[in-house]
Image (cartoon, rainbow, N blue to C red):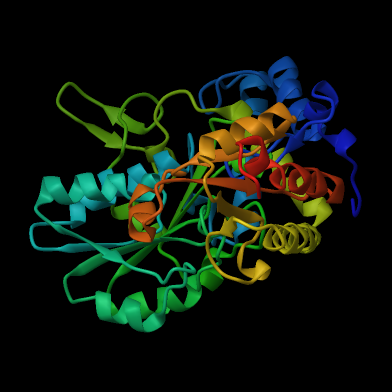
Length: 405
């Protein structure tokens, strides 16, 4: 599939004229994904991993086939390294509660990039308070750039973990994860990569990146809500205690104790989200057929168009680099004199969806000395008409709020 139309996405038929520019928050779902999920529940529904009858076996195969699809998609060595969760947030919490509580102690350090989403900050903040460890921040410049020197200077012999997103949900900047992983390895520090904003848009290969853990959400890459992925190096996951306890994650249970299932099932307690997993599998198939190279090409073109037109408008300030190629479909901005919530409301009145607020990155906004901002984030299913409608409304914002220019 080297071409597609918006007709692949039913939401655009159900909402005529919608310009959807909030794909960093969640992506729309193609018909192929919706139909696959429906078919699972219509024809294959059973509790995976439990029933030995034919339908139960089919459900288990569908669920485990999805795991293999994820393994291939991110280049992991083994399906044992792929844990299904609810979302990237749960994946990151799993690392903090399981690996963190086992390996972080008093006097240790956890280093977090200042631009991190709260999901990759609050688990570590909570853990450090609980364990008496020190939470440190790696700061970027105003364009969102992190340097190797800054990382080396921030690391110490006490730094157990470094956490950073591959692509920032505010700046849209692609961070040099492979190089950072090499620096961390030299220091004896593990690295956690939040790939929620990268996995839908660029090729992600965990072995090439050299990361220890990586997390992403299905709903940000065409799949249903409620399914996420944690990748962890097998030897790390093997050493970690379970995150949740209950059905399916056990081997044996006695009155006095229990032994736990092998990877990855020891981290997947209770009835699993099989429908979400098969939806994620279908999303991966859709992305693979279209091609990540094609997705990246389209999104770069649309980002450059939006960036160039926004730069022409007085009083519009784009947060981050002065180069559209550094934004990867994410353009966070302010308009002089106009509150971001008013920006979003005016766009909504024109059937254009953008986001406003601190984008779950309050420490970053404090660092930038900006209270909040609006954000437009696009995907390959957007087109030039969407961008130009966005620009046309953007030009009118100050006038609508009573300014002369």
